[in-house]
Structures are given as C-alpha cells and as structure tokens.
Length: 114
Image 1 (cartoon, one colour):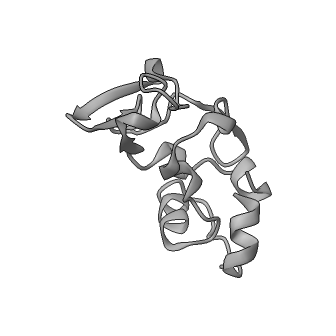
Image 2 (cartoon, one colour):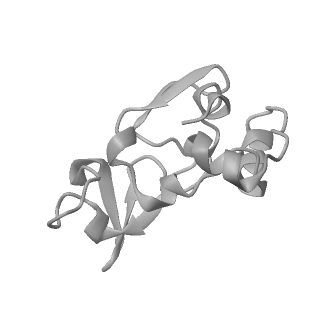
C-alpha cells in the first residue's frame, strides 16, 4: 500500500469492489474472507459495504483522507491489487472525497507502491 493510499482510502470508499467468487476463501485456494463479501450474481461477489451509496469497504479502517489501512491487505482481491496510485480511477475517487489529485507516477513505481 503506497503512502498516498495509506493517507487516502478514497477508492475503497467510492467504488464497488467486485471480483470472481473463487478469489474468496469459500473456494479452495481463495484468500478473501467470504464473510466480508456479498453475492452480485452467480460468479461475482463484492466486498460488503461497496454495494451501497455511500460506499465503504468493510475491510477499510481509519478515516478517509487522513490515515487508513486495509484489514485484509495480504488477502485482498485482484481488483484491489490492480489499484494504481495517481491513475484516473484513483483521482476520480479522490475528487469525490474532496481530495487533491495524485500526480501520475511511472507505471513501474505505481506497481511497487500499491
């Protein structure tokens, strides 16, 4: 999780976090705690709290825009692993929380940070 992400959390409190149900620990080899998910349809689930408005993932701890962390960071879904600090989606979520945008970083640096 990047320094930006640890002081932000806007993505986790703005977007629906949906992913293939097999990533949950309900399936052999899955890691995301199934108790923290809800079914979207037959093959997708979402993190609880991200299916409503306002959205906020149940795994997000702390105050958005100040200091946050993911309580299941090592077990997070592929959707969460794809988040890049400073990309278009990041800055869209930051704007929704009245936070200034993150300056785009080179792809290699962003992958290391998140």
